[in-house]
Image (cartoon, rainbow, N blue to C red; front, side, top):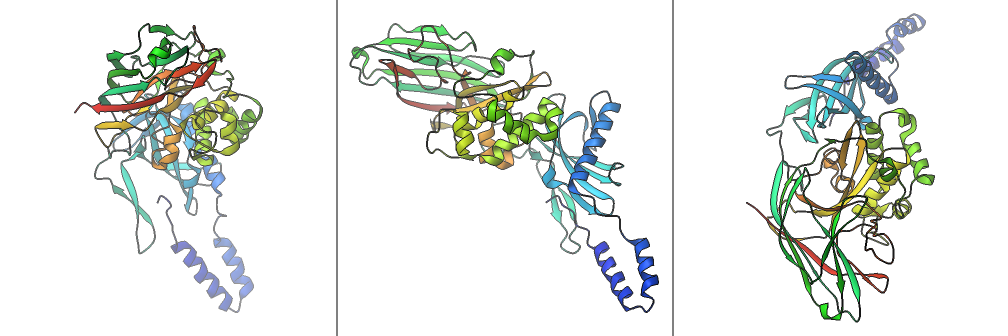
Amino acid sequence: MRKLRINLFSLTLALVALLISCTPDKQKDEKELAQISPTPKVSISQIEEGIKAYIADQTEKNGGVFPVKDENHDLKMKLVRVHTEYLSNLGPQSHFACVDLVDESGEVYDVDFFMEGEPGGMDVTSTTVHKLNGKPFYSWKQNKEDKTWFKVPMDQSNTSLLGVVEGRDEFEFYYTAQVPQLQGPARMWIPIAESDPFQEIELLETSVPKGAKRIKDGSYGNTLLYFELGPENSGDEIKLTYAVKRKEKGPYDAPEPDKTLYLASTKLMPTGGRFEEIAKEELGDKINDSHLIQARVLYDYIIDNMRYMKFGDYGRGDSNYACDSKTGNCTEFHSFFISLARSVGIPARFAIGASIPSDRNEGGIDGYHCWAEFYADGKWWPVDISEGNKYTALATYYFGRHPANRIELSRGRDLKLSPGPEAGPINFLAYPYLEIGGKEVKVNSRFSFQRKI
């Protein structure tokens, strides 16, 4: 929709060529034609370099930020990426570029640029903020007569996004599970959701077997319930009821993270090797750019190359499986991203919980959902790549945003607990982890909710 076409110039050249072919003094007219021949068409890569050079120059002149002003905005920005799919030639020395920029608060803006000039000397003639976190302020419409494009204001700039509750959400969340038939001793671990700057949690009801203990994992600070069970607990129902007040999550300030934790290799999220090779190949000359720009390249790589598919050995968050099959659910999408990011020095982390439906106010929830965050420019940046893959119109939103309609249950991978399973650290934890005879046994679990309206 953003490509403008100017056909009048091409038509004029064709007419000139026709006249020349009919004149007797062909040599003289060829000389005259050469004098009015157009400048060779600028390549898309040259337009990309032109807009990047312009942004870099203005950023240096303005103390490390790029100023963006239009009739409604006065912003200080940093480059995230150039939309190469929208770069266009509009005519001789006239070009169009669309760029993602982020402001100081972490809001991601899609900005349209019109430029004039030749490679190495392009200047911006017009700048307009097109979208905020994926939501358009205007659209483009084509003129049927001359095939050019023009802007059309959106009737409502805060158009709701599919599956997303913006701002705040409030609901009760019901976590239920049933202990299977036991023939002997068993042990179980269940995550406990806790409050943080983005979710306010109140545990309203706890119905669990006697003797439950609260324990912590030392690396990520998760709180868990630990049970020692026997045959007498067969069929016991476990129920946790939470009151949740959740707000939309954007990039947030944080001190430099523990790199021994957030750049580390885990059992199913290895780093280095082919993950480093893939990341560096995708980054290309962006290997020297900021971690923010690099993370967006890796985010786009996952979206472009993976399919959301619950098939095969999915659901374990195995980066090697994701890399080989290019399929999986949310665990594969985010594990693959974390392996790539950590392999080129970008701290990244994993979290899991549940996504609350936005189109109804009660009922069951289709299992767990997980997501990731990466660290850049002094902030943790939320990403939800599997949702960005399923709904491509939301790819910009989910780079730097988690909606309000979700609950986080635990963080991290390879959770080391005391007491812990005989099998070793727990891969990740949303559903109950039941161990019998040193082996994990699946537990019948269900999530549901009731929204406060």
